[in-house]
Length: 302
Image (cartoon, rainbow, N blue to C red):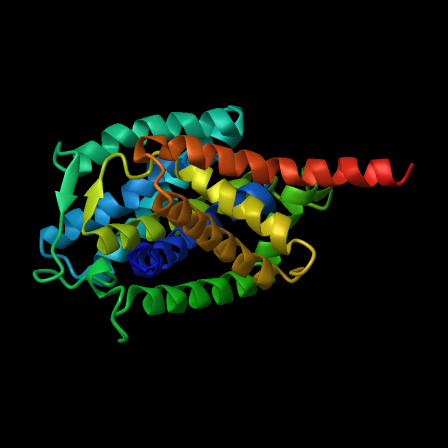
């Protein structure tokens, strides 16, 4: 019984983390699925948002102002990647890597040269905190994150239905045809990258609040988690959720599933040193599922 109780005790934390990383995965979805770009800036931005937010808070800035500044910092990073890609002709994946490398030094500078900066829930007014994850109250990070996700998905659903939002979706679907229709695709790509990295920075700030510190390496492998959530959502919910808002909800579900699976495997006794290997295997399996499905259908059609 103790064996199962340990798992049940760990699940609320896994759910809360899955929801926060689901927020980040929505940012990845915008570049990966909407814009059809591979943006590796995410690994850097996932630290930048937390670093900016935590450092501003420790210097007496209001938590909501600090959160807004974190989002703006992420959008600035996305703009740099967009300019490198559109104005300098650097492939998107390389532009993201360049920005990501630069952000490592910038994040260290923001954090006053320290690899880790901590905040306490007793001293600072944190929006979410892991200490309340098992409480049945309005302070529970699961409840707060669900509200944040609902608001974000609602705003994105409205935005991508506007003329500007449709131009972004058109650019990702067919850039050449979009240019023929008079859409400035370079501007659309920059805007999309700014929105994506702004959302990632927001997730970073909330994650720093949740765990109680910002770390210079907290974004390492973030793109893998984001892509895993997007791919899992596509494989499991691809045919069920066709509406844009529902697709965003599916991405969040994908992140939650990913974290719950990780928690179950760790509960079964996996060596934590093998965690990154497990993450890679999970992504590889879900990437392969659509291919295996097509192979089976092709054989069945013969």
